[in-house]
Image (cartoon, rainbow, N blue to C red; front, side):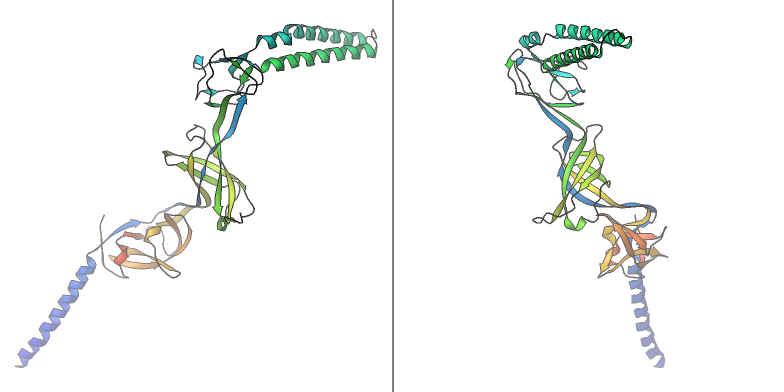
Length: 349
């Protein structure tokens, strides 16, 4: 009977131990994915949106009347059209005006200038030798300058018959006029933009006022041009908040050398306010928190280890860890939600 009683005691103990082993097996089966920590850079940035505009833009109007004629694009061997690239001083439109050309008497003005210059130079030579008085020299100089002004004015009047590009850029508007039509003074002829550089004005929440400063780098993106990111810089920052919106303005100058982005595009701007070249960086969504305490899980000898961490700079996806983790720690990136300290884990890809 004593042996039978002992058997009844041993069997429950055996079953209890077996249940503990099964619990342990369940812990071992918890699947997780891990990533070995390596030092890498991280940036903290402030995000804003805005519309980009050309750094140079001009509407050219007719300064005189004349008969409309589009000039030839020397690069394309045809008349200029919308979208053509023009260089500074390229003539885009002619306003033929024979009456103006005759009235300027450009040839006689040029001849008079040449004669006046020669006479002035002759008087200078004679004055040095004592052959003429100072008054005679000055009268020759006045005649020469008057001839120069008259000739320059004639050239200015004739220049009004040519509409030329004031800077390198792209024709973005070229209102149609029938060739040979008489165009009056003050009519809009062509619009040119140079958008190898762009600018935008953004509004930022007041809490960011202390972080945003001139010269900070800015990444600029557009959803329709997904494979291209441009770089710019903050140029101006308003020192005060708008009392209505509690926001402030900042201006960004953007480099667009290939003219990838176009004026009028809506863009997303990421202003880099902090940067670390080499740091322990973890995904933001794997950090667990309670109050001010933050922690992550690592794997040590087949078990989960809870690590309390202190964080530094961050962005919407990543966080810098300044304390609690080191290089080559195996960080749990998936399956961490149900882990406890010392939970047995199984590493899966």
